[in-house]
Picture (cartoon, rainbow, N blue to C red):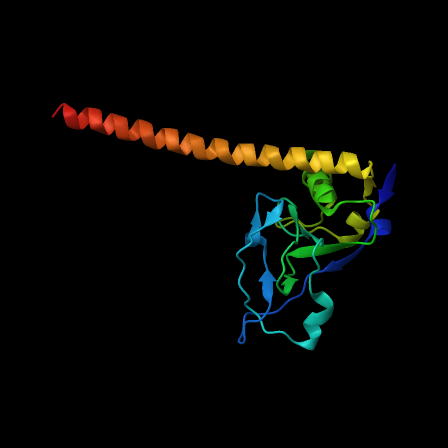
Amino acid sequence: MKIKLGELAALSTGYYTKPAQPEEVVYVQGRDLVQSVVLKDDLSPSVPMDDRLTKHLLKSGDVLISSKGSSFPCAVWRGTVKAVASTQFLVIDLNTQNLIPEFLVWYLNTDELQLYLQRNARGSSMLSLNKSVLEELEIPIPTIQIQESIVNYYMLSMKENELQQKLAALKQNFTEKQLLNLVDNHE
């Protein structure tokens, strides 16, 4: 079964503000995405709280999708501090229990969907993703059990990739040190 995202969620744009004192609210920006799935967990407040921000505060489970650039990565907000998304993002607030936010993030981050979003974005030098493109996007809704399995497998796959990169760096460092030792021992 596929359902349009606009029927599963309310979509809104991020909020524009500038860093100022007192620093009470996290201002989530594109650079805060890590591996295009999760947001950094060490974000610091950088903007003051005011009445205008209240309706833009993120809730745990909100999905943030980058709406500008050459790709449109997204992530789930699971933070416990007050935060607001910058205008770099569209915020997807799911209104159903039949769709896990992490599953939606996985689906939107697939190569196939990223290509679809790029083709449907507007602009010549910098692409911009229109909210209506996302609202019309049909999302597959497998059972919760299947969604959880996909998310778990995907997260394990990402962790494996991260560990392989660390291992490759360690091997490179080890090889370099061994070769330098070889040079030093032959002087």
